[in-house]
Structures are given as structure tokens and as C-alpha cells.
Length: 452
Image (cartoon, rainbow, N blue to C red; front, side):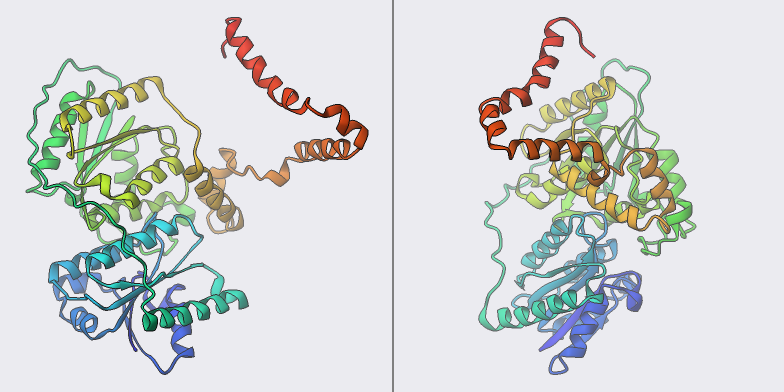
């Protein structure tokens, strides 16, 4: 089989991820492997897509190979997918799968993003391999890579593909015209609207205008298409110690001085390719100059999204997951699908209320699970990621349960006592009362007029 490996790592041949594909190539000389360095040559393909098109057309199986960057695939792969669609490459009927490496932080959303775009292209999708960054270095990881490839070949031969999601056709997009008028302005809050609004994107432009009118505070608009990015994140870890990016385009200072100083964030974009234009993904990835530090924790965020948001389940998961992991109060999402003006007005009111009341909410599974992955990663790599380690220590993120020795011994004591039949008999029916007692005291304090 002719297998085209799309190496989307900006590190090219020095990518840890691509070595899984190289490992499989060494094991299977009966197949023809071709490697396309899309991560390193994305700017060249923007100028001339002909070489990439020729390789895609000759391939029988396209194997997307990339590290997971900020919930999805690297900017370079986003841009490549755009170029494939813009160039009109016919990939219908070809097989597609993927290999990723990560610490499993939202690898599921990355895989679904690639799958969704493969479905758009009419490809036959086989479930990919989501490996840990170090899996290839151990026997079990090597076995799993071999098993993946065997299953991949078996699936292609027997037609065992991922079933495309069944969704209702999105309604025809209607033109949205601004209808809201600005009211009295308040002082003391700064709101930044980060967007990648294109020149002819009237719907998004008008949604932003109405939101600014409905918001009782002054707001600033930052259009990412106007920032002179030198390129996407290189994954070089040059910023791990100093927090300074190796690029000289000034993005790290722009991020910290122009965006992160705001009291409220609004992200505004139009859906394309199941996310938005790659310019926003470049912005996402380049924020790695902050490492894994939740430096905007507590700042409320809101979204203005043009497009069929209700049909994009993976995008909805990403929007919620970002807020949860970052510790940002998600005020909501306004779209141009229904009563847009009412949704925008409500969103502006929610953001205002959240900023003024400094609202917080406990993290759900998306936030707790994501931060536990980061907690363990940074603790292990503290010698390299010094800025992250210092931040995690200062903010109490190292909440390892094995260090809660008093609590562990308390539970051991309770368990030992309940193992005694006589005590177990006496405790019958009283456990629930003992557990709920402290909660009842909190309610009683409120009833007595004592609220902390």
C-alpha cells in the first residue's frame, strides 16, 4: 500500500511523533512509506501546493502524524488542511488515519478534529493511535504501535471504518445586520475582543459591533489577521525557562501587555473546517510562551461565533474545556443561528455581571482532569519547565493526594474500626448522619445570619 505520512510536527525529522511512523516503516518494507514534512514546509506549500498535491493524489492511505498542541493539532496542520480544501484535491475514497503523541491532554478533541475534516474530504477513516510521548521507548508502547498498524491494515482490507456522525443539515446562513444601540458607559473595566475577522465577514463584524454597543464598558478589538506572526509554535521549549519566545515578532509581549491585562476576554470567530481560520490556531499555539501556567485564572470569557455552532459538538467541547482548564468563568456563547441580537445582549449582560461580581465556579471534569495531567507533567519536568514549576508551587497546584497523610490515616482508622463486627453493627444507619453533619452546620450558619 502507498502510505503518505503527513509529518505535521514543526520539528520535522527531529519529531518524536514521526518516529512511530518510522518504526512502522522499518517493520513493514512491503508497504511504501512517503513522508511529507508539512510542519516545516507549510510556508512553501502556501506558495506552491503542487508537490503536496501530487503526493496526496498518489497515496492510498494518508496518515496524519502530529503532536497535540492546545486541544487540537498544530497550526501548521490546520493551515495544510485549509490548503488541501482550497486547492480542491480529490481525496474521496482514500483511507485516512492518524498517529499522535501527547500526555493525553485533550487528545480526543484533536483526533475528532482531524476525523471531521477527513469526512469532509470523503475519506474512509480508521481510528488512530493516541500515544504517550514516551510510549515508543518501552516494549508495551512498541507493541501497541504494531497492533495499531495491524488493525489499520485489517480495517482497510475489511472495510471497518469510523462511522461519520449523523447530523441535520445546517440551515442556510442568513445575513446579520447590527441592531443594538450603545447606552451609558461605565468606568473601571477593560474588555478585549480577540478576533480573526476577515475583511468580507459581515456577520462576524456586525456581531462584534452589536456586542460592543450592548456592553456598558469600553472595549478594544484585536484582529489577529493584522498581527505579523513569524510563524506557528515550533515546540522548541526555548521559552520553558525564560518565558520568552524564540521568534522576534514580539508576540509574547503583545500577548501579555495588550490582551492578558484585560478584565474580560471575548473571542470572536467564524467557524471553518470545524474550528476557525488557522490564524486563530496560530494565536492559540503561540501562547505556549506562558507554558502551562493559568496566568488569566479568574478572568471571565465569552464567545461570539458565526456559523453552525450547534452542529459542532467537538468545537463545543473545546470551548468549554479551555475555560475549565484555564479557570475562566465561561459567560456563554452567542451565535448567528437564532435570535442573535437577544443572545448578544444577554452575553454582554452576563460578562458584565461576571466581571463586577468576580464570579467563579468549581472546575468540572474537563478542568480537573486537564489540570491533573499538567500537574503531574510539570512536577516530573520541573528541571526544564522552571517557570511552570515556580508558578505551580506558588498557586498550590501540586495537590497530590499521597501528601495528605492526615486524611489518609483518618480513613485507615475509620476503615479499621468498621471492620470490627460490633462497631459495624453500632454504626449501621449512622454513617449518613455523620457525613451530612458538617454540611448541616453550614446551612444553620446561614439561617442564623452568619455568612462568610
